[in-house]
Length: 115
Length: 113
Image (tube, rainbow over all chains, first blue to last red; front, top):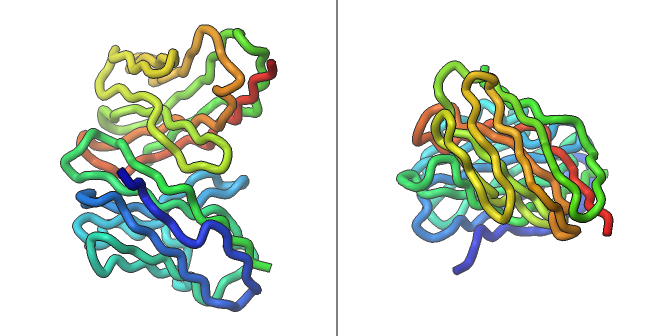
């Protein structure tokens, strides 16, 4: 079975450019999560969706970040404009709402470098 | 708010050594507890879990027991292998049935042959 699919795997961009990260959750999963991983702050939850509806976006750093889930099989995380401090690995994860407590299925991550 | 604290890394051991990675938590209710593992270049994957006090989670030779009295969930393995080299994350779900996880900072484990 296909797991969570993220793209791109690596992105290098210059400060001020727009960055769009994409995620395809596991088919049938109703919850989708965006996490950011850095050496300094560890793993941070940015936002999560249930049934395509944003439930908690309190972890989104600022207005430069936005996330959408237009349908059950696709989500985007956009940073505009990007800054060097946004450099991190961004993970998407999904889970079935009625599934096992706390078991998230992670993608392989998108490593973002902002110069 | 809820939080998870793990022992500082990195941890380096020789093959077949005994492993303990400490994890303590702070939560207002009765959380479910988890260990996730991240192998190099990959996303996190669930290693084991426990949903109530005194439960023991186990998988791939790893074990952890939910200790409510000490608010701990320490990860142990009797004999580690080189293939266990990874970053290990302790986590909690603050409400039963909720998918929102709070992660510890991670502990990098390196096993030398």
